[in-house]
Amino acid sequence: MSEVCVIGVGHVGLITAVCLAKLGHSVIGVDKNAERIDQLRRGQCPFYEPGLEDLLDEGLQRGRLSFSQRLSDGIVGSEIIFICVGTPAVADGRADMSQVEEAARAVAQHMTGYKLIVEKSTVPVKTSQWIKRTIGLLNRRGVEFDVASNPEFLREGSAIHDFMHPDRIVIGVESERAKQLMLRLYEGFDCPILVTDISTAEIIKHASNSFLALKISYINMIADLCERAGADVRMVAEGMGYDARIGRAFLDAGVGYGGSCFPKDVKAFAALAEELGVDFGLLREVDRINEGRIERLMAKLREALWVLNGKQIGILGLAFKPDTDDIREAPSARLIERLLRETDVRMKLYDVKAMSAMRELYPPDERLAYVDSPYEAARDAEAIVILTEWDEFKKLDLVKLKSVMRTPIIVDGRNIFEPDHMQELGFEYYCMGRKNIRNHF
Ligand code: NAD
Image 1 (cartoon, rainbow, N blue to C red):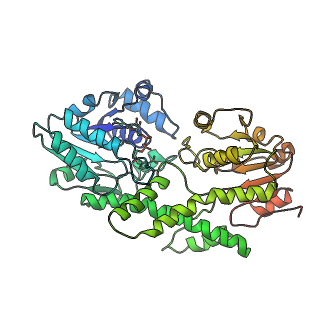
Image 2 (cartoon, rainbow, N blue to C red; image 1 turned 135 degrees about the horizontal axis):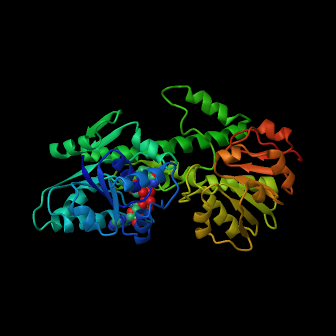
């Protein structure tokens, strides 16, 4: 079993730490966020992720998992060090690598024996060389070390399952020692393990995320086309998806992708291509189409309500996707921002898990109320907007919902209901790329 340090215990690092501990490794998670470390030591999860609390508890109880705010605590006793810090986008779309550099400098400062430093954060190709250079320059004692890339493909909301049952594990290495250490770490995993050079591993991650984002932007344009042509994007996606070369996944039309990965990774990959002199305009288009989805939603709201000023709207779904409380780059935040800036509408907001995160971003005031059920969000509303496809919303009592609304209008950015059924129930129903139900025109 290996001695592992995880630097940065956020959505990726914490899952990595608890899962490696579950597999029997001895893991120490370090983070500069003192409050987070205190919480974790008490067995409290800093964010919502199904199954996380149990694994955290188990790791702590068995003594395989510990946490510290001091990087030296983690680095000195560990052979393998995962870098799981953030790589947010800067204004021109490139990835901000300052957290990665800071982590690499800390490793150099505290390492006393051989270390394998593994990038798990999503980073631009050649980052490993910068890490190597940074550590090399500061490594006055001449301690041996290797750098490896092991990109993470987990999805928030099913992160533990994804980590434990991955489609593949990608390992980019440049020494036999690093390769053996990584293979030992993942011993027993029943999936293809692809061992490559480091640049290839780094590109696999950016290429995968950008391709998935491309599928979403593609189907969103097909949705707009379907609407103009009177066709149904759901059926188009189904018809395309049966083709094994295409696949049905990531062909759900809607308000576009959000979250902490796709928006920044597409931008970063495009910026990287430009830096390397490769004309990858396709990626800029993917991003442009996604940015345009909120405009599309605003147009639908105007189509539904004519004048927005003076209206009350219920917003169902704040998380960027179901089963998470993450609102980073969520379409909900972008819509709320625009409605606050461009109109005087009043909003009642509801989400299954992401209420407190959104409350921090947009504190309640006379125009923004946080309510504790979808029916409260609907009460006296002139329209409801659905932005996250939570199961709870799919199971709503629509008759009850309609009875508390001022006017029965739903703008569904996630296509969770059947237009014909909504018509039978007497709703006006605006969806994405399917039949819109408009009764009084
Ligand atoms: P996050 O913001 O949730 O967590 C990052 C953590 O790193 C924070 O807790 C922060 O305090 C800590 N940190 C930053 N600098 C540090 C330092 N110098 N020393 C110690 N701790 C430090 O980010 P995340 O969502 O976990 O993403 C991390 C990386 O993984 C990103 O590159 C992201 O693109 C990638 N990734 C994310 C996902 C996802 O679903 N969130 C999936 C795959 C890959």
